[in-house]
Amino acid sequence: MKTLTLLLGCFMMANISLAQTNKKVIKAYFLDQKVKATLICDPIPISPEEAAAQDIMNINEALMGAEKETRLLDINVLLSKQAIQNNTFVFGIESEEALNLSLAMYDEEGFSMVVDCDFELKAGGSFLAINIENLENGTYLLRIKDNEGAEIIDYIEVSKK
Image: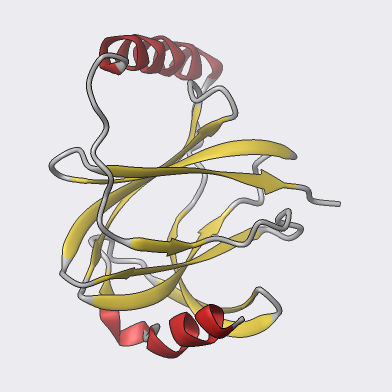
C-alpha cells in the first residue's frame, strides 16, 4: 500500500484539462479511497449498422497492425483489479510531461469499440472517470494512446448488479 499512498499523494485535479468542453468533476471511490475524478467520456451510442462497420474496420486495423511493434506509452496508469460494480469506471493516470491522449474501450476481443474520447493530460497526475452505465457486464479492453502511436493496453471487468 505504500505505492498507492505515494501515487494518491501526487494526483491533483488541477493537472488535467480536457479537449471537450463538458468536463464534470465527480466524487467516487477508488481502491476504497474517496477521490475527485474528472468525467472524460461516455459510452458511444451507435446503431447496429455502424457497429458492424466499426467492427470490420477494427478487425482490419488489428490484422494490418499485427506485424508492427507496439511502443509502450510512458505514463503510469493505476487500475483497480476489482470488478467495477457501479456506473463509473475511475482510474488514476500520471505523466512527467503534458500529453494529448486518446482512450478507447473495446469488447473483450478488441473489435467492437464501446468508448472513444480524446483528452489532454498536463504533467503530473489525476483521477479520471468514464460513464459506463450503458455497458453490459463483461471484460473490456482499455487502450490509451498518444499521437505518435505509443500505447498502454489493459483489461477491466464490469460486473454491475
